[in-house]
Amino acid sequence: MEHIKDFIEKATALREKGLSVGQIADELNISKETATWLLTRPERVETPLKDISVNWSAIGKSALRLSLIASALSDLLMEVVDEEVDVVVGISLSGVPLGALVAEDIGCDFSIYIPKKQVEKGGEIGAFSRNFSEVEGRKCLIVDDVITSGTTITETTNALINLKAKPLAIGVMIDKEDIKEIYGIPVVSLLKVTPL
Image (cartoon, rainbow, N blue to C red; front, top):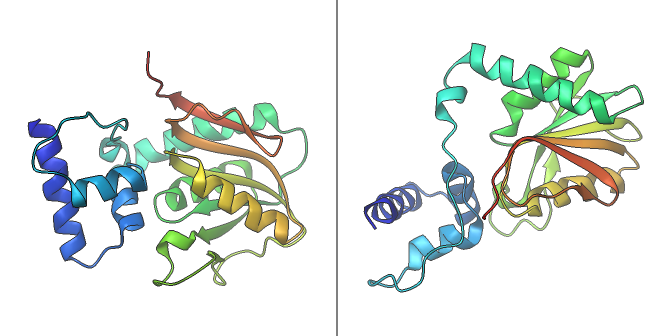
């Protein structure tokens, strides 16, 4: 129960800083549903949450560790891709450094997708950053840190398909949903977290 109280305090503090529920979920590596529950929870917890938090800050705070993880993810992605990759799309926020390192590792361009949960309130769709490589009509890899529900990965895939890009594979550090593919596009992860 103390662990849940810590998360309630963290979620509340992030909300007080002005973060949206989606941004809080990203910061705590939990689902939006869990973030909502933490912010609106009943005083007495009767039912346990069906989510887990992933704290990968020991990797994220070290450029060396992050680059080693990116190399392992690059290797895993290239096992399932038999075409030349034009661009790696890192999903904002935490997929950006990982995606940039994967792009460097395999020697291709880099782009950033900002999901709708991070766009100004009222935003209906996400956006590709204009400061990075174009994706339209190109062969892409999608990279993120954690799959919590699959919503953000699916949104990113749809955005690429709408631009006539060809997603070849999706790679993440940790998959909490054991997703094997999205629209026939293989999903690979370094770690899968599944209930027994």
